[in-house]
Image (cartoon, rainbow, N blue to C red):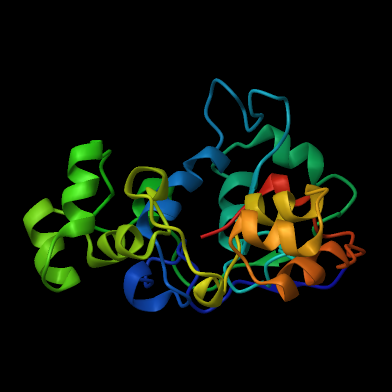
Length: 223
């Protein structure tokens, strides 16, 4: 398998400012949720179901994700992710090469403003608030990117009732792609229920997954 080099705006680089450098409607809330891919002394990289979860590179296409190089090097090395080390036996991932100075911990990749847990009341207040993302963020001590996630319906949609329009949902989460593949209804029914375009349903129902460096969607978590 060929060598993979860390992407330009990988959050594991100390030079990366996530909300400035990561393209595609970066969401601080989704970023923080990737903590579930980080090994702890207790779980050693295994989730409650015994499976390994991996952090996907944000530059790889949804449905054909590849493992984040920065995450891999950290977790296979100082992160002491035993589950990942076992999975990497036999060279399954190929050679991973980082570029420049790297963060030592996942918390450091989040930048200065780490999203705090919000109450339902706060979420609704932020969703209805008027002003720029910067102004609202300053009021609630959140990054503009986090406020944008709430406003667009990318995060806390169950609280606000906001559903992301199919036309604006350009990047699909691994969880949504899995739902598309497993939905047993018609293309039209699946599109209506999951809130995506019919062409998207057709694309991911028929997409092959032949690259041995890839994992099942449910194992990969992306920004």
